[in-house]
Image (cartoon, rainbow, N blue to C red):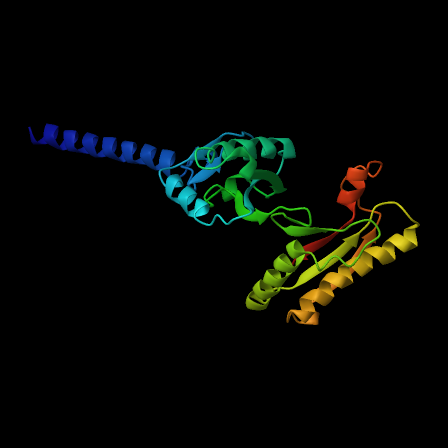
Length: 254
């Protein structure tokens, strides 16, 4: 009887060892693609455009909406990761936009995209690299997630007396003084005129903005200026609308 009991104990021990080893292989040693994915409140499966939300999303959504300001629009910028396309990111941004349509009108929301590196490595980020920003959009100032576009009339550089620009640049100067950040201002033109003239005109536009910011108390050393002249259009230069969009200065944040 004792021999049978001992044999049973050994077999039970071996069974427990076998089961423990299988559990260890499946949960600890298993390949990366079978590990549990830690997600933020908003995320995506790689190479898909459907936003996945968790129970924490409603609170984060309300925090985003709480920052609304008069005259501003919500900019939703979705990522495209390594091996993905901008078109996929635009589809993501469009679907995230739909998550806000119970609180905002469609015209209050703009969408955009940007390159964001590795998809799986950033899934635990709170919004999986999606960006939300309340931005100014008017005839003189267009904020994007990483830069600001300042628009100029034909052959003009002195536009700093418009209310849109003075309000924006005054606040920008205050924000930069608090943050200590530096900026680069790049002037652009349409293709009317010769290349050297347009280069000089673009530089004058950048310098005019720098001058205004310095008057508002920003250190000159925090501002660099450059000109691309007519060489980097963002719209069709054969139309008046396109020319207007190309006559701009871009403020880039460092």
